[in-house]
Length: 261
Image 1 (cartoon, helix red, strand yellow):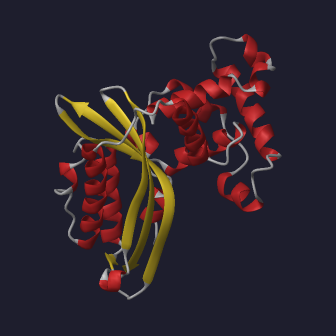
Image 2 (cartoon, rainbow, N blue to C red):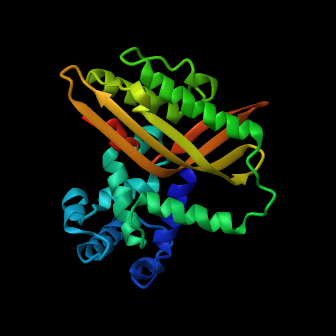
Image 3 (cartoon, one colour):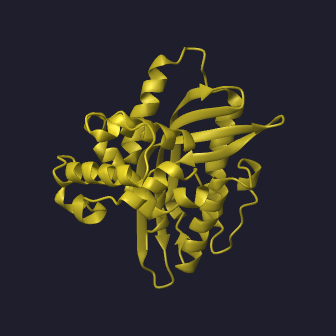
C-alpha cells in the first residue's frame, strides 16, 4: 500500500487544477501550500459528479489542510492504513483524481501495470497454494469462533504483518458481538478465482484475485447477519530469506465485513 500512497501523492501534484495554480510553481510544499490544496480539492468535491447525495453525507465535501499535510509528510504506517477515517480521506482524494474511490484508483492503476506486463508472469503452484490455503485458514478461523486462533493463518502470513493485525482485530470484533458463523447446508462459503500475477521483482510478488465471500453469522439473540462480497483483492507476498509468505493484502470490503453489527 505504501507504493499506492506514493502514487496518489504524485498524481495530486500533476493534477491540472494543481499545476495551473500557484502550487505548480512551488517545488516543496509547506503549510500555506496545503491550505491552497485543501481549497482546490474541497471546491472540486462540492460539485463532483461522482458524489451522490448519500456519499456526500457519508464522506463530506471538505478536506482539511492539516489532513493533507499529514498525508504528504507522514510515512506509511499500518495503524493509519487501518483507520476508517483515513480511508475516507483517501476516497475523497481519489474522487479528486477522477476515480470513484480508493479501490477504483488501485484497480485502474494495477490494470495499467497489467497491460505492460509480459506473458512470462504466471502464477505458479506455490503462489496459488499460498493464497488458497490462506483463504481456507481464514474460513476455518471463522468456524472456530468464539475461540480466536490464528495458528493456521500464521503458516501462510507473517505474524508481524499488518494483515495479521487486521485479522486479529476482525476476530475480536466478531467475538465481542457474540457472532458465530452458520455452515449447515453450505450456507456460508467462499470462492477464489481469476488469479493473476501483477508483478514479481524477486523480493515482492503482487497477485490479484477475484473472490466471492458469502457468510451468514448469528448472534446470541438469534439475529442473523449476512455478508455477501464479490470483489478484487491484491496480495503482497514477500520473501525473507528463502521463505515466501503473505505480508499484506488490499481488500476494499474488509471494513464492511468487520462491522456487520
